[in-house]
Length: 396
Image (cartoon, rainbow, N blue to C red; front, side):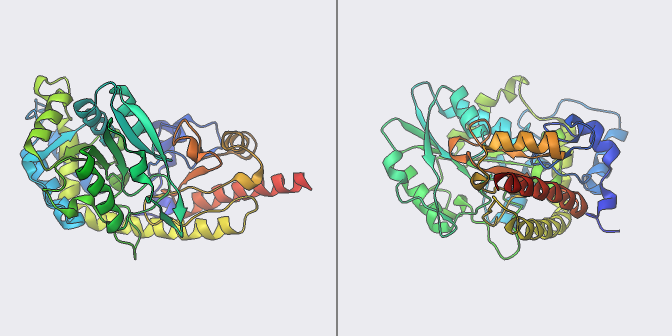
C-alpha cells in the first residue's frame, strides 16, 4: 500500500485531533477541505525519531537559540532544496512560522510605520504587522496572463514604508514568482530601505515542471533587509509540533530578531522534541516529501478537471501549495453565504474569501484544500458540484 492511499487516512484519529476548522470541529458527516493541513499521518521517520528521543526520559532545557544540529540541518536543506546560502548561526528555530512572522514585525516595525501587504494573501501578514503598530497598505494583486502584475507596486511606497510582506509561493493564489519579479521587489527594497518579510513556508510544495525561485538567490549583500520564515507544517504535516525558523543574512538583523523573540529569557523558544522532528525531516525527509507532492499533483489535476465542468465557478491553475482558489462570483452568492450553504445543506466545509482570512480582494473566491486522499477529495467535489447545480437550477 502506498503512503498516500485512502486506507492510510486514520479518520478516527483525525476526528479527535484535527482542529482549526478541520475534522474534530465538524458536525458528523461534514467533509472539511479547509485549513492547510494534511489528512495523512506524519512520516514514520518523524515518529521513530520522537520515540527514540523520548525513551531516554529527559526533556531538559535546550540552547536558547536552538540546537546547533537543527540549525545546520536547516542550512543544508535550504542550500540543496532552494539554492539559498544561509549561515547556520543566522537561523533561529522558533515555535512556528506564524510566530516567526510576529517576531519579525515586532523587531522591525513601530507605531506609525507603513507596511505593504498583498491583497489577497494569508491574514498572518496583516495580523502580525498591525500588532506591531504598523498601518497596513493593501496592494491589490492582479493576474495578467496567469502571472501577478507588479508594474505599479512602486506607487504604493511612501516615506513611511518600513516593510513589505512577500508570500512565496503565494497563498492562496498558488503562484510562484519569476526571478525578474523578485529582482524588482528587491530593487525597491534597496532603493527605499524597507524590510521584506519573506514567508517561504510553501516552498517545498511546488508541482513538477515548475521551479521555485527564492529572493535569496539574488545574493546575501542585496538581501540584508530580507527576513525569512519557514516551517514544517505544510511539507511534513507537523502543525501541532509548532516547528519553524527565522533566518536572515545580517548579524545585526539576527540579533534584533533574537531580542524580539524573547528566547534569551526562555519566555520564547521552541520545544526540544520539535527540533528533533525538524532535524530528521531536513536530513531524511525529502524522498517522502517528493512522493507527497506527486500525490498532490494528482489531486490538483483532478480537482481542476472537475471544477472546469461545474457551473458558476472558475479556477486558475496553481503552480504550488496544496490549495485552490476558485472564483465563485457567477453563482451570484457571496463567499461566506456559499460556504455556509455548503456546510449546512451539502455537508462540505471550505474556506471563504473576504476580509477575515485573505483580505478584501479575495471576496468572490473560496479556498479548497487538496491535502487528502483522492476518495475524500472526490466526494467533497461531488457535494460541491451538487450544490452548484442546484444553485444554477434555482435561477431558471
